Amino acid sequence: MRRALYTALFASLTAAAAAQLPPGHRGPLFHGGARPIRLGPTPAGVSGTTAEVCGACHAEIAQEWRASQHGRAWSDPVFQAAYAVEPMPFCRNCHAPLGRADAEPDERAAREAVSCAACHVRGGAVLATTATGAAPHASFATRALGESAFCAPCHQFNFPADPGSRREVFATDEAMQDTFEEFQASASRAAGERCQGCHMPWTQGADGRRHRSHAFPGGSDVAMLRRGVRVEVRARREGDATVVEARVLPGDIGHAFPTGDLFRRAELTVWTDVPTAPQVIAFAREFAPSLERSPRGALVFVRRQSFDGRVPPPGMGTIPFRTLRLPAGATRVRWRLDHLLMPTPLAASHGVADPRNRTLVHEGEIPLNPAGAP
Image 1 (cartoon, rainbow, N blue to C red):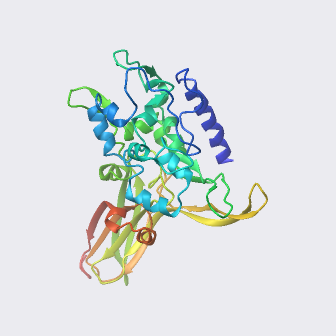
Image 2: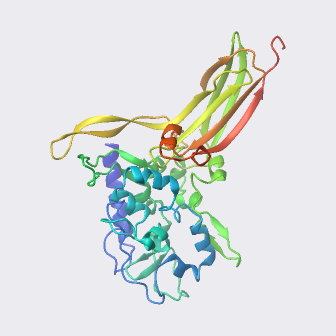
Image 3: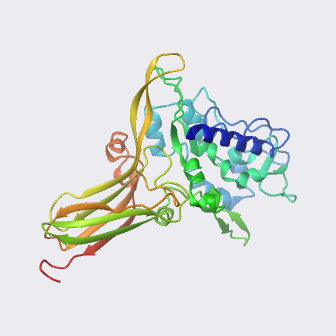
């Protein structure tokens, strides 16, 4: 039922956005990985639609984009490691959307990744949120670019079928990435906030003019991770144990923590100065294989979410403390919260080193009174 409601909502948002697009463009802006993006004719007034062409006039924005995850969507080593295991057209259509569905992206599509044109060019016009009468190229003003729904096709999608595999795999109604629906249920959305408010904040350029940042800060941005959650830890002596109570709470965030790829994970590690193994509280989605009939009648194993242990979006209720018992005799409790791209064993098997996989978000320590002290 939850997915059915989302599907209906997304269809209505897509239809509304389509009504705001140039007459020369047909269909939705994005296809959620189902097929590549077709830009249409080159807008009048520009020689092409590459990021290099756009950067000639929008140098500062182009520089922000080049260093972003959008700019590195195809070349990112972590993505490439995962793509080597499952090289699906679905992945290519999202990470190199200007390529071809039936082949590896050519040099241009790989270099462009999720480029300026992928978001801003359709139907012979450059899309913008407001009218740009002074622009030297054909433009079209549309509110769609400034709405959270604009982000949904790339950040909310179900597990796809894999027509390239040797075994039958069918598309399910199980969310592979659930970020937009998490946002829809959050207090941030209820307060009228939009995805762009955090991920494309206003910034002042070198020329003194304001523009939306195209650095697209997200899970690879340490400052954003630190704003997104806060940690509360308290500790005490209790008989023959050191008792630690801890919880991770949402901060300035509009979705679950962590969000995005199904392998994203956070770990709160707690230990003391007594030599013993640390204890870890994990925050992640868990999946289990489910034997189901495909549309063609075959019995097929598909992934189904069995548990969501992540920090929920703000506004989803009270988060209780988790209690850990560590050995007695400690004089200091230490803790750290890390954001992981994937579980450590999986990262190692994909050749992703721990420094790239693991980002420190918060850390702290709590001194304890010596034994017998008041």
